[in-house]
Image 1: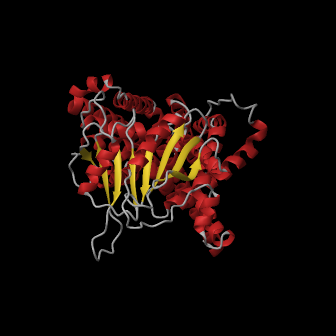
Image 2: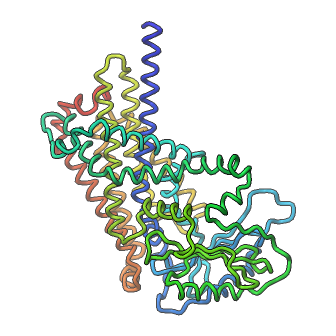
Image 3: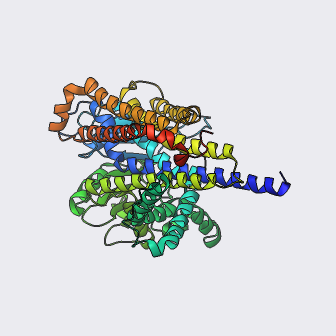
Length: 526
């Protein structure tokens, strides 16, 4: 082989590897993003069955609970004290206390995470013990990799470019061939399915790509603006962007914090937007400031955020429908569009279906690309096998690992040390094993059927574990208004049914597929 041909072949192989990395990363982003649309429901499903709670019992005032916790944990009031209040969907307070470092300690900042019963003030667990929902959220926006947020931003930008170029390429056939379905070959079936899903999900895909790019790539622009436009003054930049910066340090003079709690209660009554979160700066000090956060559900993507100076009752920062900032309003709109949290659960279900459709389109598109590359003489069969196996193994592995994550979230002992780490490591191990299996199992339809049946089995096992462990509380939870547990069980059973149905369809056509395997994944098994 000449040096020129070898160079071309190496370039094509590098292109193949880059393509598979982008496609698998995009699949993970859309898969995890679709599931995490129900972040609060997953979190409630994980926590509620473990702790009996009487919904009709009166709540202990939050200030009494905070005072009780501060007797046990020494607050570093130069940092923050954050309280996420219980609501109808999440029945427990979450309290985060930045701890005062020991004398001579130079390590990372330490803080206490407390999941608290609002009726009794009892500390039930650490929010981090129930890690599945947060893990999937991180997987969505940074792939759980160092620098992953920038990687996802670049991948999302590439996806946005691909969508625009795809529309340009198919513009003339977009309407005329919308209902086209060719049954003459496997390749044409996949191509038509890819095109139809792409057209139907186009507005959703564009919205997700644009908002995702704004989230991830905007960090780079923030750094550039801070350095060049604001000459390194980051606080000035954030102030212009609508963020209030609390720069005062503790004075050392104590201050009663009761007015702050009273203000938070009256704020919810006055605005009709109950306070969801309180964050205190310089807690218990003369320079104390309380930040309150609420969502105004009567308006689209409108938050109510106040910064309350405790010593004199003044507001040093305010964001609501009458006090707006263009940058903050734009970012809040982007957040609402991206997570679908501006309407009811029906919208999030639609988001879920569209997100899964885009994830499927990505996989089908990658397989079509593999089919086309296999017909070219200067492409290495070994490279194609590697790319195909990594595509199938990575995508199927994320789905299987998610199912395993649900089961582990339920059955891992609550008192297990580093429970969240166990779940994360198990997720990674199951993903890695699935990728390895893609290389070991020679027939790819067998591999897909096995992973789908395993996924269905894990989902069903999770529901069975729910009823075995907490069956006596299910009726009580439903009557108390905690419907998330049964709702998640229903979703898991639907997921199991879909996975089993696809596996069955693959099995019914297996004998025919064995004769035409070269049309489905050419050269993968050669």
